[in-house]
Length: 441
Picture 1 (cartoon, rainbow, N blue to C red):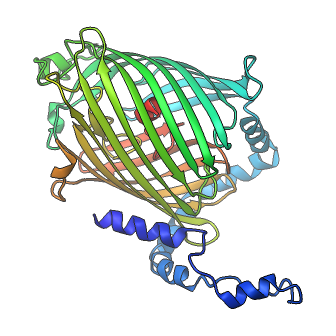
Picture 2: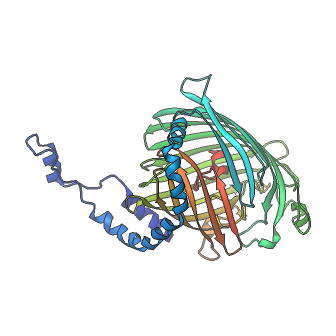
């Protein structure tokens, strides 16, 4: 609750919309005989007062980041002078690009591939994007997407995606917030996704999304496990302990989501906020008899702490409630840990029917498109959201780099620590945009 209160206050402080104006100033601004250019802007003393304390506290942090990032800043100067980054951003903005990717998975492992895009031959305002990767813990992934070029425009837009991936050594520790690290096992997940989504935007800051998708997961013994490591059936031999292991999860998913995005720019926001909420229903196909409702929401606030510094606060919660006898499969349970929640824990570290996470991230931009980050993450899972309390909350912290233009996020890398381990990650996924949520929405 404390994080939610801070988040709400931060969003009000960071909002660019004036809540009240001086009638005298309004009259002067509208007076044709008034002195144009000399109107006094609304006072921001309240916002400056709210942000004064975090600015002072973060002065040593900013100084440390400035020193640590000196090698990167030294390298960026010559690269910027070649025009490479300018050409890259122009290509991304026109949806015409081919970018090699080298991603580090949390276990860790190197996944190499590419992202590419070109204009769609089927629709004048559409584009086709490709993704291919091989290696690391995510051994193979390929995806093809047809979508509107500008999904933030007013009116209607669309997205159609087909995706196939094989993760040969996915982590599974069991179900519950107190699942032990020594219980770690592995399983192979071969996954097929077909997704269609329609977006309607009645305002520049409001988005309604309606999605329909088909998911097919085939779970099996881990591919490369050798003693003393264990495959999932050795540590969790029954369907109750690992739901879905002996009955491949297959389902149809429908969802409606509302997003209110008041950030000043989507790729590299420095002020404003975002609120999201969704409600969806899943029904099993074939031998999978599961049916459940899943809902959740999150809020993000961006507080400018000077010309090049931003403090980001985020709070999120999700829950799945089943109405049948079949349990929710392990691939669909809420999970925290990994590159977009608790970054100092391994992917899928904790799983249950509900989850709550909170994140605080300080970003220091030392170039127009690269920023250093210092972050702290908090979270836990539970059977129901109503059972949330502040006991046994897991924590992680770390630092990293992110690369983004005003309208387009590109990639990030970080080193994160927890009481269990350290995790090195490099990914094309936004810090607050989990891949499994994007596949549903």
